[in-house]
Image 1 (cartoon, rainbow, N blue to C red):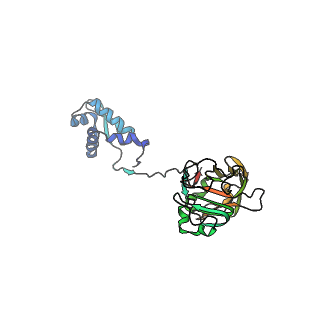
Image 2 (image 1 turned 30 degrees about the vertical axis):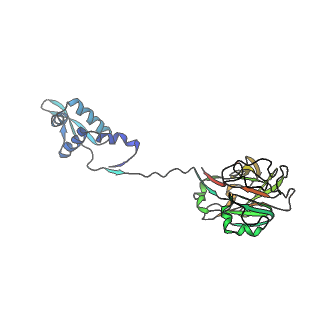
Image 3 (image 1 turned 90 degrees about the vertical axis):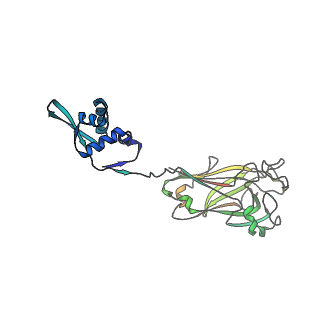
Length: 300
């Protein structure tokens, strides 16, 4: 007899919840006995034994039959099984979401033109408006970066896309705005999002925001642009959306997720658009939101 250790088989395990029930199993292991004999051996009433036997019959441990005796019919009990195997099943946890955060300084590739720069929460990284400092080892510590034109790329590792056939949506959120020397609250920028060379679509930032301090932007930071807008880029089975507004028909199946294939997110400010207004990206320690680039995969 094989029994799974689950709540569905609770009645079976309750048959081992008292000394009397265990003793009944021991006695029946020697040979069949009637209710009276069991009650005598246990020094309890026949009513108690009858109740225990009934529970064991329901659990499939004991079988009983009525036979003729010296004093009429009597109920004779015996074991229905002589061996039980317990199966401790490790049920796979149902996966609903998996997520990760990518620091904004952990970009894998870039090509930027001034105005541009990076800063950690403590200092500017290198010289402002010199793209070479995007290659500095200190770039990984960046909490803010900006560029007038070009692109920045982030690698999303393949392991987050395991069970690709069950992926319902990919959601990427970040704080972002245009780039303008000092700041300009009304300076639109057409920002393009691309995944592994597939253009997902554009979002137009309304400006490069300043005039008041960002909630997390350090006091020493004086470049002017203080905060951005928290945007939510979602690719699902219907298309690609920014904050629920469709920006293209590119759907999740077109990204080729899985198969140990990394995805590369490119955020760019092309020159040949109506509003070539640059990009500023905020991470932890800058802007109005205490987050880096957040990646979430939702499963069916």
